[in-house]
Length: 242
Image 1 (tube, rainbow, N blue to C red):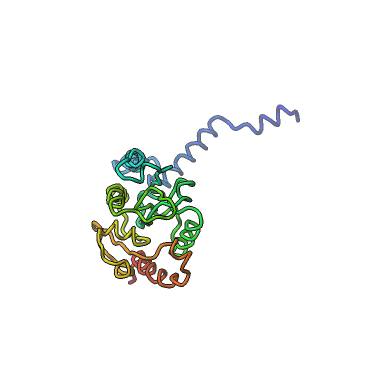
Image 2 (cartoon, rainbow, N blue to C red):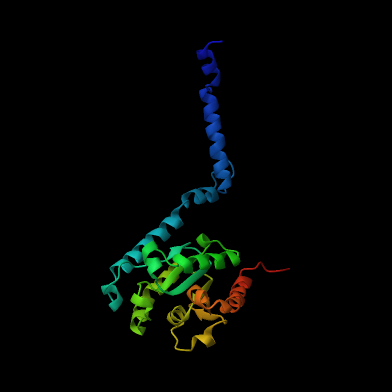
């Protein structure tokens, strides 16, 4: 048999190629919720909504982050290298809010990077989540030199961005890591020791203040306490029994 004949055997008939393509498209539509060639209003609505909600969320987030970058409202903006914006799933049911952006965050361009980020990843995994399933941000988006504590005025100014950010995501639960995050969300001067370990309300969302990964790196004995706090969050995501 000639080489040309062998090649002809391997070439599909045009009609066969059409059926293969049609079969693949029908399988794709089925996975997205459309049954075959169903052209009902429901199926057409599904097709019309493909990517629409995510595109809207991305547009909203992009505008919000542009405002972050342009912000010159507090003293921290004078010497900052980069604003650390939120990162993760913008439709997450669980949001994590840390205190002040770290030098590692600034270098990586996202919150909870470096050693604290490695520990946070382990915490998230222990809670039966993946990092891309949660939304992570900072209460103060600029890094302070020499681990200084931010001024109350700086926290208050950054709060407006944090509030808009969380209003966009609308998580069911917020884990507030550390005093600054809890103070910013709850707008209170109540000592952190009294806030920690109890749920509080933030615009209809539940907030659980607990010690931060940064604190745990220096105080390993607090891990057990934090785990008890996190288990309260985890119970909220358990399927209802019965």
